[in-house]
Structures are given as structure tokens and as C-alpha cells.
Length: 345
Ligand code: G6D
Image (tube, rainbow, N blue to C red; front, side, top):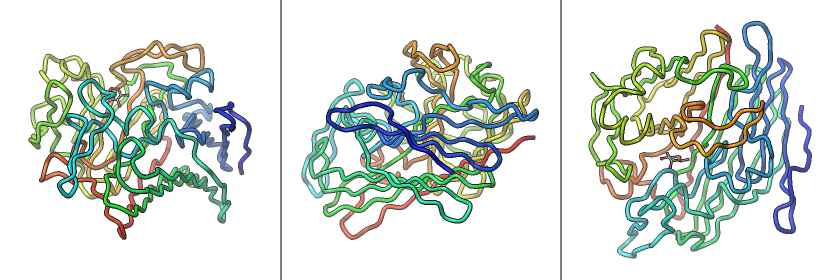
């Protein structure tokens, strides 16, 4: 079941909150500004239903949202080196909003746009379908790009996120979701004491501007090794050069093509989230640059109080021939899907 309510005015339009709930009490709260996840409420092993994602106290804070809480990111995710790329010999210059680079689709990327939405109840599933037309040369990207992002809440405590796109001209498209998870419940503990496993043998080292160098490094013997369940805090503070440079985890991992590639577990509450994705890569980010965000439950944003699993193609792939380029051509269909499954252990 679902309800909708006004979130805030944006120009002459209204942003809308869409609140979904399944029979087991799981709640998914969505916002059509940024096609964002505003909250996810999940029971612990005692049935206490609490928030497992970082959310602003004031819904209007999603208008600026420099931390990208919960939003859909696009046209591209992550950084584009030098804020430019070439397609068919033509140079496209992009906004420089991440230092010398372009980041997360630019200052007026999809995270800061009002999307259309519709709700469909299909059997025992509720779907929220967000659509947005990114017009030709919006943020200096070529092509009229029709985007659809569908969130589905099931009775099996899964959230499906489906990304679809079509363009009338060759362009770049690399969509993700930027939700910060913390399974302790209302962020009562940092993520450091939560455990993570990832089916990933390789990660992408970053340069000083946090652009992938192009190397695919093996995780063996590095803080990036989560092939066996490990607490997130175990290696986050080590003097590893990648950890120091990024102030924590802020890196892409190359995922195995299997089910349940990512698992995060909070032993005290018994909450577990398992992620399965069709994307080849995930950027894991541990909220290393907090902005004193005013969060729900009387909290302020602090480093390492949330963790993002930004499933996507390799960032800056257009500049690395051996990465997925994120090029979408006219006549092609962009389709990728990420599943979040919640359970109690
Ligand atoms: C910082 O480097 C990080 C990004 O990965 C993150 O997405 C952003 O903050 C919100 O720029």
C-alpha cells in the first residue's frame, strides 16, 4: 500500500513524498525531487522498526543536498576527468563541480531535478516509476535522454531499483543511487562496527583528484579486501595511501557477476542487507566528507556514519578503453537493475 503527500514547493511546482509499506511493516519513502530514497524503515530481531538510511530532518534540505543523500545520480555517476569527453571526434565540456573534474552529472544533474512519477500496484508489489527527460545539451551532454527509474517494494522485503534509458543521439549514461545505509537503527552506532562482504577481487586505485588511474588492483593484502566478512572499521583508519587520500572508502570495486555480491550486517540488531546488481562495478563511500547535515533522530552528519553502495559502470570509463564506456547510442536501450534484500539473522 502507499500514500502520497506534499514535500515542498520547487519553483511553481510541488515535490511529492511517496510512502510505501508492505505487510511486514517495511517502509520505503521516496521523493520525486531527485528520484530519491528518503527513508527505509526495517525491524530488528526484536521487531523494533527503525530507519536504516541517513535522512535529513528537514525535507527541504533535499533541495540543495550537497551530500547526495538518497538521490538518483545522472547522467553520469562519479567523476569525469578534466570535466570533458569526446564522442565521435566532438569535444563536450562539462561543469566543473568536483574541483577540476565533473561529478555526479554536474551541478544541475538528475539529483536536483523534479521527476514525474506514477504508482502501480502489481499483485503484492508496489512500484513507483519515476521518469525524466534530460533534453539535448542539458549539462552539456548530447542527446534527448528519456530516463525511467522504477522502485519496487515486495512482500519478501526486497527493494528493486531498475534503471532504463533511451536517447536520440549518442551520449553517456551511468545511473546510480546514492543512499547512505546504517543498519544499527536510527544511526545509533557508526558503520565501523557493521560487517561487510563483497564478491570483488579487484578495485580501482584513485589518483590525487580521485579519478581512477586505470589500474585494476587485486584486493589481496589491502584494506579493500572484503572477500571474507570483515568489520568496516577494521582497516578504515590504516595508513594505506588510498585510505589516507580518500579519508576512508570512496573507491570502485569490480564485482563478480553473481547473486548477492554485497552483504552488510549489523550483529547487534540482527539486520542484514544483501545487494545483487547487474552493474559490473560498485563505488563504496563511507561518508568521508560530512557537512554537519541535520539528520533525523536529532543527529548531525559525521564521518563514517553511513555507507553508500553506488552500483554503476566504472567511473570515468569514457577515458579508459578497458572500462565500460557508459556510451549509450540511439536505438540502444539502457537497462540495469539493483536489488536490496533485507533480512534478520
Ligand atoms: C565526495 O568523493 C566523494 C564522492 O564519492 C561522493 O559521492 C560525494 O562526496 C557525495 O565528493
